[in-house]
Each structure stands twice: as C-alpha cells, then as structure tokens.
Image 1 (tube, rainbow, N blue to C red):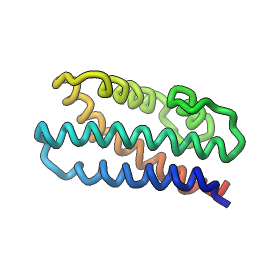
Image 2 (image 1 turned 90 degrees about the horizontal axis):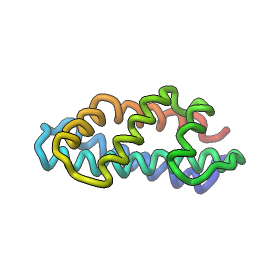
Image 3 (image 1 turned 90 degrees about the vertical axis):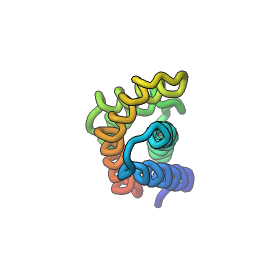
Image 4 (image 1 turned 135 degrees about the vertical axis):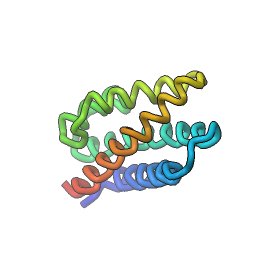
Length: 132
C-alpha cells in the first residue's frame, strides 16, 4: 500500500515535470529560458521531496534536505547517476540566488540535455517502486 504523503509528493513531482516538459518543444527565447529555469527549480524541489517521502515511508531516518536525500536515492537505486544529480543540485543552487545570463544559458542547456532525462528516470523508478 502506498503511503499517502508519498503519493501526494509523487503527484506534485509528476505535475511539475509535466509543466517542464511543456517548454521543451519551444524555441529558446529569453522568456522561454527564464520559464524553463523556473520550472526546473520547482521540479527539482518536488523531485527530492518525493524521494524523501518514499524513504520516510520505508522507515528511513533522513533529514528533509536535498543534500541528505539525494545520496540515499542513489544508495536505494532510485537514481543511477549520482554525479549528474550532484551537478543538477549545484545548478539549482546557482539559479536560485542570482541571475547571470551566461549561467542561465548554461543551466537551460543542462536541463534540456540532461535534467529532464534524469527527472524522467527518477519518476519511472518512483512509480515502479511505489508499493514496495
């Protein structure tokens, strides 16, 4: 049986990821780039929180912060590329504190090339293991 808090967190992650996917086919303009980065930020937040809820539902004692949750996601096989997720966390932290156009271009390129793929893989893993 799926934990109610986990189910809610997974639904929020799913919605955020769907919103991020909406932007992928659009040509990159400054407005689209800004929207992509904003949606990346809230997708990242809902992603690690879904993992946190999955871990807690299985009795794990883990702090409610991305820094603590992401290594546990790797250890539990929910993510397979710990380095890429560390890079994604770094990108998320960089975008939340300042706006610098070259950095925005770099983050948007990362999201399109790797970020969405990593989110999709995590979503699939969480859904496949929801009832464990």
